[in-house]
Length: 188
Image (tube, rainbow, N blue to C red; front, side, top):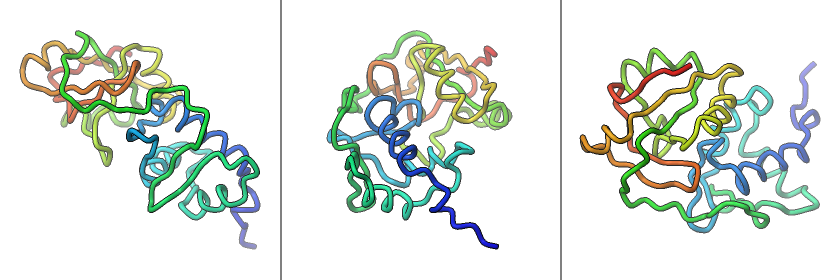
């Protein structure tokens, strides 16, 4: 017997998850909102699909959720999605290269450590590598991918002075094009 995924999915719960991601904590999902709060639906789906709970969510599910929602929290236009109201974050993502704090952090799954040691931190389908100002935020991000994530310490000061560009994302997140492994130290 084939199970109808749509009949099992809690769309109200999915709507709340997406609202949290788009309104309050895009850095936890490694999302890059534009100045009007839009993000590509593909980027959102990539983030959601990394969670066991939402690994089967598709674009059709997002469309269904939006069409059938009583609260009309989101809109989806030309492959981009945004929350319509209730934001608690600054929406403008500044992309001008700026000197970062001396140390930044990145939370990641244990299964990615070998690749990071070999290649450094790469955006992997996103525009930028996301880095955190503090260990707590990095831990929150890492827990989306692993219940016991690894925290990486980035020597942002040295990287900056050796030519790596950093961009201020918001009050908790810094962005970089990539971070070579020589600037990365595994802390846990």
